Image 1 (cartoon, one colour):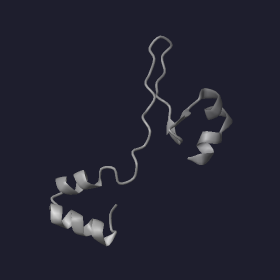
Image 2 (image 1 turned 180 degrees about the horizontal axis):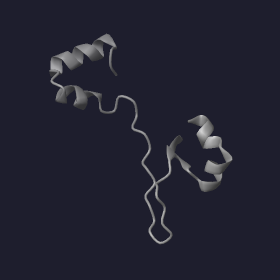
Image 3 (image 1 turned 135 degrees about the vertical axis):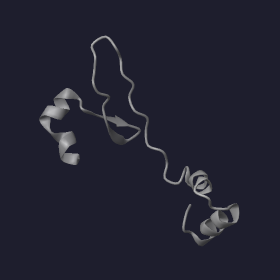
Image 4 (image 1 turned 90 degrees about the vertical axis):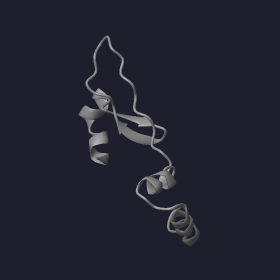
Length: 73
């Protein structure tokens, strides 16, 4: 992917955009009269860990134990 971002054709067509310091594919297709939205930046690592583990059936005690052990943050 790093080579694709640097390819002259993709640079000229602005195929990739930088969002919050992370390269993202630009919206496609692009229309002359209809603006497209730029994708949002990445979520911080671990931002949704507790919610995901809860949805996957982990108990609060299990999540706390994982945090205390340093397995998750």
